[in-house]
Amino acid sequence: MAVPSTVTTALADRPVEGRRCLEAGAGVGNATAGLLDAGAERVYAVTNDRAHARTTRERVADDDTRSDRLAVLESDLRTLALSDDSIELITAHGLCNVLDPAALSAVAATFRRVAAPGCHLVIDDYAPLPATASVRELFAVENAAAELATGGPALTFYPPDAIRRCFVGGGWSFDRERTLLDPVPWTADHLSAHAAAARDHAAGCPGDLGDRLATRADRLATAIGSESAGRMYSLAFRLSA
Image (tube, rainbow, N blue to C red; front, top):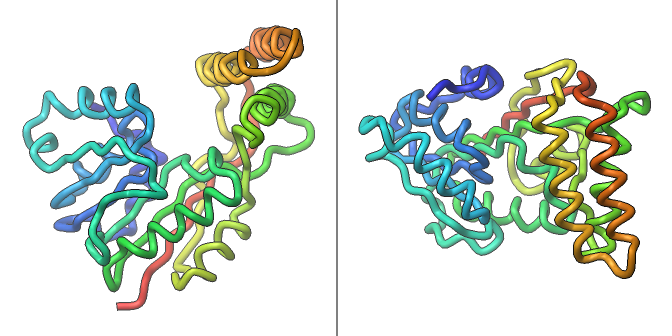
């Protein structure tokens, strides 16, 4: 499988070869494949989404040089059953934007617990969108549906300085920041996925409000089609040896 340039760029200056790695929030396996291709000794790809776990396994299963070094764990990162001080490199590619501040703090505590002395941490995520971005309204509808259904937002776009403060305050030393995408291409597939997420949350809303939110999300995704807006950044940190 091809590894996206955002992943290869984020890992290019990190010592991956021979390391025990944690990919936090495996998604569809892009960063997992990037770590394996860069020579990781072992990658623990963690997700609480069964479909994502299955996709990650399937995408690397046809390559024995990858699959025998991969463990896909279906787990909440906040209660991850990995040993203390056992991981030498942690990546979180597009994870933080789906964590509210309380969840982000809990996940940061997990990272600190499993990190071995000298561990590297790479966090890649999306900066807050500019006020002129049309996709902001779609994401706002998704968040409104999530707030009503679950009591919390579906998406939180953290400025890089906020992520930096969170982890430096937890014992990590800041290493570098780089831009991965500017602007970010929000494709029709991305917008359809966010509209679908909004519909899922809307199903749990009271009365006919959920139907109105679901309809609004679908109409926005169709009207926008696709858009290039915002910035994706990569931050790297290191734990003292």
